[in-house]
Image (cartoon, rainbow, N blue to C red; front, top):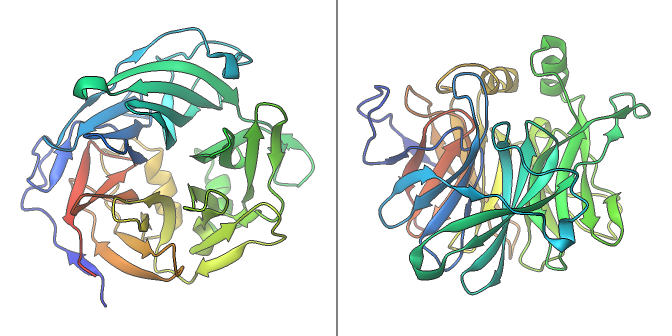
Length: 352
């Protein structure tokens, strides 16, 4: 089966919102669905031209987006070691994960940049169809080995996954200077590597053995609650890692794009999205003042029961949308978001 080939929307004028778009988000690098509700939450990365980042809520029914108001509160007991309250003025939200705790109650896990490198925790309530969010604490990202493998470096987390035992998994690599062309070149050439790290309140952080990958990026928990899907962006590959496994298992390789986030959709399938053009150009654009990164993008669908995969979307970027970083199956549609832009792009979900 061939991937869906998308044409550019009729209008690419700033401010115009087409029928296949949801406008009102800011640099929505990632998205998650609050199961059993009408809500999708997106991250919002701060950066040139947009100022503050944050979180956004989208109503699935009305397809409207708005900033998610966050209530301040002391950290919960489980995260009392968080060194300081969240500075919303500096908060830049990156990767997301959500855990359903009870009816109408969820915990949102967010990779936060800006004032600090940490996993920020939020308690969300959805009773009576209304969304309420409060900050609940943080878990600072640990230092990691630098590019030389020895010198400690600031850890830069990318993706996060909530674990069923109350723990947290993240993908992390040494923090790089995105304004330094040499650092960007090293990343694009595949010299940078990172790991999956696991956190539990009783033991703190530890590196998951056998998880080291070049260009480590997206992360998603398999339905068995134990194995993890991980994207190796510079390798153009998807791997599976798990506790007790000495080496990562490659399940998709030689992809025609650079996979970013991996999301489980309403249909029980995983979707990985990413840029098709040169990775160096994508990284430079992500941290520029460009309103949109116009590179082409693609989406891969992965069947968790067979670990087989197929390309389902290939599309060119334009003045409205480019470089999808997340693909999320929502009902009978496929929602795509990007780390640069003010909207979600919607495709009809392709039949099997």
